[in-house]
Length: 168
Image 1 (spheres, rainbow, N blue to C red):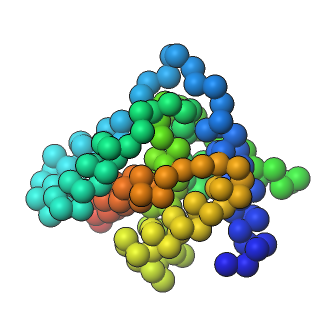
Image 2: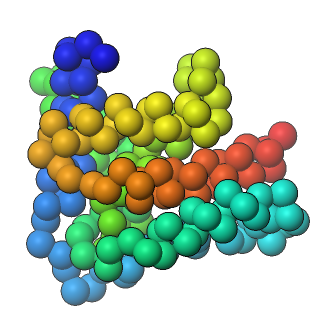
């Protein structure tokens, strides 16, 4: 990937890395990666998804104890770039204690399900975007486990697929 493109992505993820580096607050809830997918799976979709879902759940469950501040619903629509080129995080109502990999996996899954990203659909597209995201995040000063980010990305991708199917 061109160094300029990586620099742009890193600049977008800079406020995310800063959020993750903040001192955790005692009043933040612990992030539950299943909170947004569980209600959707009660519709019968879980019968079609068990192997991928079970593996992702297991991987996430083996992850680190939630210890940093995360956005909780990170996607491109939650980032705003001002006229000076400074990126800002929006909509922090899902902020929680969690694993930074949760934000990065969610970010990659959202990008992978956007129409412009469908040259590499589904899991392959999410993993490609996630590899770029992880490199850019590291360039911005952040550190996240790639296997955990992949598992969170798979959960988010499943949630997005069910949500998009619900919308028709």
